[in-house]
Image (cartoon, rainbow, N blue to C red; front, side, top):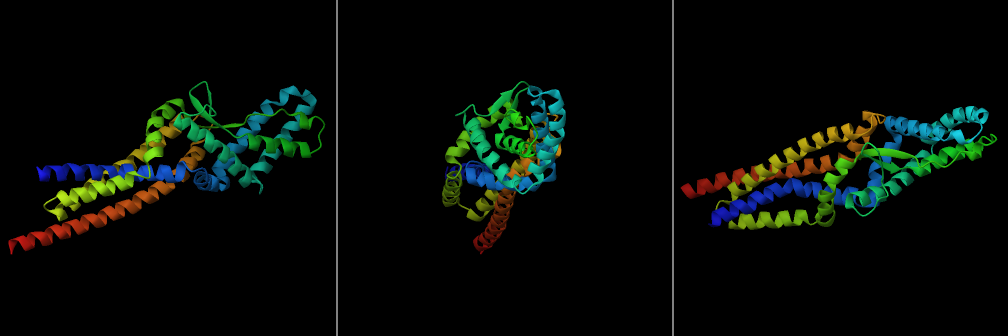
Length: 287
């Protein structure tokens, strides 16, 4: 009975390792606003993201030019393109990008928590983040040119697609659990590991077996992330290049991959220690 209890407790502990790893990453990187903004800040220098954001700003701003005289609109449109390029490529873009993502973080976490409708959803099950500060920056650049009616360009609620409503619905339950218990999961895992080893009769073998389960679980998490990346890109509108969408996904999950590598290394060390301990214990019993 004791051996069975030890097996079940250690099995749960091993399976909890990848869950705890993902929960810690989510709670440490995605939920805190400053951590999220710092994580995605390097995307301001990514050429693929710059191209995608510039194209979105140009399209949404030029679509709004119908409210001014056509002759003026024809002169404003080239200015809009230059203004968008100036905003995206200029030194002020990083600040604008951070401000946009700071506002977007509240929308994203609110949507995943089911606490807000501030994330816009349009036909086609597309979830969009509102990037109003960038659109405002483009209008300011155009207005600086001194063109008559240039300041009459209406405000646009510039948006950038981040996924689909289906993905959002499936993610909400897991996100709520990780948000509440993400940092506590590693503690629970450690307690289960200690308890299971205390119950086990052959602790070296038990530790090695738990490490194997953990490594298999981490491998499954690694594969799941690759699959999630493909699903994420497939869910984005065709207007968003895969390179830009992939850059966002990759920078957001980079710390998770790093954490998984560290945990896997620790599990591998535990496996070696367990095997050596089991072998030494076997020699001792034979004597």
